[in-house]
Length: 370
Ligand code: ZN
Image 1 (cartoon, rainbow, N blue to C red):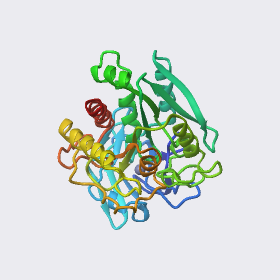
Image 2: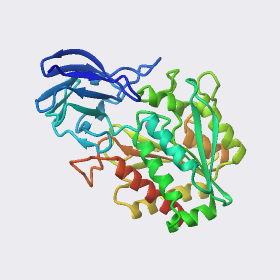
Image 3: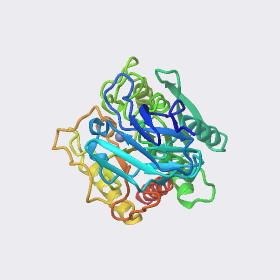
C-alpha cells in the first residue's frame, strides 16, 4: 500500500513535496498573508506496521527555530490520546520524525490539537449549565463568532482569554480545565471564586487562525497580540470586539493564555514597563506568581522572558494594555510545547492534561489571593 498524507481538515497544516516509498518530504505552510509558520497537523495513512521517515524540511525558517532542538512530535491513533514520538530529531533545518504507525491511520501534530469542532462542543456544553451566560462579542474576518462565557456574581471583574496565537493549542486545553473547574458545583475554590468574581472567558480569540492551521496570525496575517493599542475592524476585529467588551465591564484581573515554542517551562510575563505602574499593582502580580509557584511544581520563576525597562512596555500587547488601561493585575501565562524541564514526562511531554491541571492551580491560587 502507498503511504498518503493529508491536512485538508480543521486545523490541518502540511504540504507534501515528495513521497518515495516510506519516506516523505514535507513543508509547513505559512499563515495566510504572513511569513509565520511552525504549526503542523496531518494524517498519515496506509503505512501501518512499517517504519516511516517524515522529513519536515523547512523548519530552519520557522518562526522559532529554537523550538526544534529537544522537541518531540505528537502522535495519536484515536485523536483523543496524544503521546510523543521519541525518534524526533532536528538537524540542519530539517525535523525528522521516524515511527512505525500502529494502524493504517494515525495523526501527527506540533501539539495535541484543539479543533474548532471541539471548541463548539465546549462552548455548547458550558452554555447549557446553570449560572453560565453566553454571548457573542462579534465576528472574525471569516465570519466566526467570538464566543464569551460569563460566570459568577461577585464584584471583581476577571477576564480570561486564550489563543490569540492559534497554534498554541495548549491555551485552549487550559481553558477547558478552567471552565470545568469554575462550573464544578462541588469545587470549593470555584464556589468561593463565583461569590467573589464575575468571570468573562473567551476560550478562543482567533477562530480563523485555529481552523486554518495557523501558528500566529488571523485570516489577514495579523498578530492579534500586537493590536491592543489600536485594533481595527479591517485587520483585527477579534481584538476590537474583546477590548470593547472590556471597556464596558472594566478589568480588575486578567490572564492571557499562551504557549512558548522554545522555553521548556511554564512561566508568567507581566507589565513592569507600563507608564502608570503602581507599586500595589506590581506587588499583587508578584504575590500571585509566588503563590502559584508554591501551589504547583509545574510552575516556576527561573526561566522566562526579560522584563521590559521602566516606561518601555509595548502597549500593543494585551497584558500591558490592560494593566495600563484599567490598572488591572494582568498577566500572560506561557506553557511549553516541549515539556517542563524540571518534571519531564517522556511519554506525553507537556500535554492537554497538564494544561488543564495548571488552569486548576491558577484558579485555586487566584482564590487564595482575593
Ligand atoms: Zn503566544
